[in-house]
Image 1 (cartoon, helix red, strand yellow):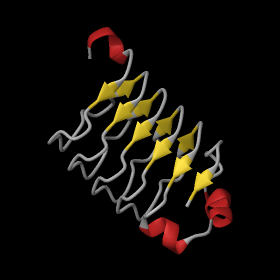
Image 2: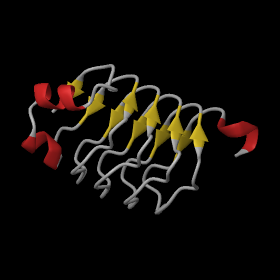
Image 3: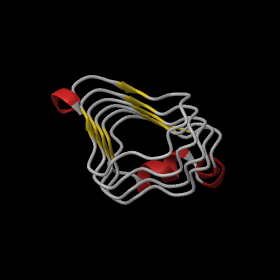
Image 4: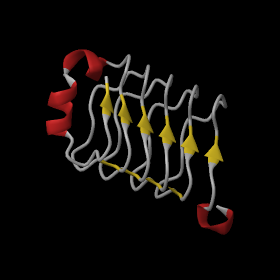
Length: 118
């Protein structure tokens, strides 16, 4: 990426189905409403990652999001060990929000620094 991924990357509502391995976005990454089903290993997001209303079911090991992670209305069924989220985690309308309480998720996800919304 030009300038090493400085700034935001808005791919919302596009037909994108994959991202390159090792991608770093220093700002926010918006994948809302895309058909993407998986994320690459080594993905690092400096600010927010928006994935609401995508068919994603899991996230890669070692995912680091500096701000908030929005997975609302996705098919997410698992979150990786070692997930780091500097802000809030949004899980409303997901299989995880039906299976676990906010308190259970907070215990399972010590790397989430903000609130967890189910």
